[in-house]
Length: 499
Image (cartoon, rainbow, N blue to C red; front, side, top):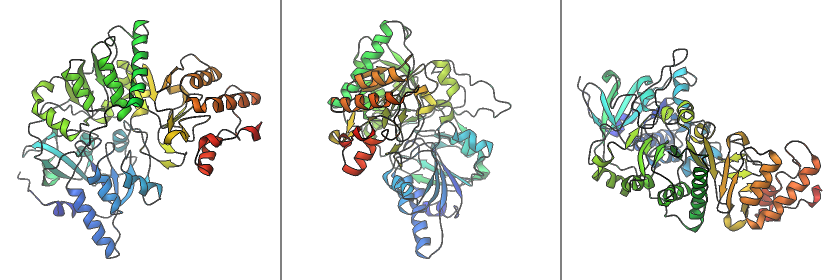
């Protein structure tokens, strides 16, 4: 069967108002980059005529400006899930122009197959190779592509010619059986392959192929500064101490790391610390730091859902692709983030907090409890089931006007039951085996910035007068947040009126 090449505009014309459209990729990696621009232009043209045009958007994770940016600016998104990180999408959902529900990344593929969200009308999938019989080689990110390729009524292919070498062999396309027929996911070490290198799609569903030659447009993270370096050093030294005392096996354990400057700093710290042995990763994304660690021999292998490399690093990867062929494997998000596999492998999970409270609860998503930042992503997939779950953040923001450690988080994503270690540039709080009061004392002593310590001790003393297993004075619990809203500075919080 001959599959025609079509323009981006022709592809966009296939998508109708109210359609549910699913996209390949995970972060910007492997995400479509051409059709969505034409789709946004079509939406604007229809809106100018007074005609409605909005679609429901399902993705593997965050995307890029070509998807979330273009479609949000065109007011073309009705509903969006499971994760976003683009400022225009963020503005739209916080303003109520877009319906958004936050979801654990490991859940969406199976929820779609269970039928919770209806049909997928169109899937847009980026590939780097394909054959006339519908065998596809994906790009730098997988997301939930195997599921959407299977479920979609129509498939649009974006054929990328940007990459210099073939990604063939880097993917592990696999869909688990759904209940009541599901079996174990047979991954017993990060390098175990369980699926196919190619993704097969019924050619009859493919409406056309749109050429693309665009990069992922991922900017490099800034080099570790003094702050992120201190957080990284604190976590690295803690892990080395755990290794010395036998609380981590001498062989070490696979690492999961979130995205961002702090995550990069921690990974570089692991690479530089001679007490940390060679290690493997089982994670949802790998960044520039991981590639460096592989080149230096510190990281032996990485199982991931996406290569979230900066554009320069991606070119370096492609130039040396044969070196990485036996060191990297990309899997669908429901496998890379599978709680079953996370628990089996015994991961050391390292993720970022937006804010944490003195009892060990973490807010990863909402500023002041109301405004969505990005989403929960895959952090809970890992933290709830990890051998060791670590959350980190700077102790202050905005020059000290915000303390990231507060009496009570303004939104709860990870409860105290999932948070074993909390780290800031001030130090590390090991919360294992501690009751709420002991956790509070440990966090205040080790993680709170000095300018906020007295305020935190004052709150704990006030709360202890109320009593209870987890002491709180509810009227004062959000005094820091209220002070910031009213005066622009959490330090202006006053507990005296609650005494």
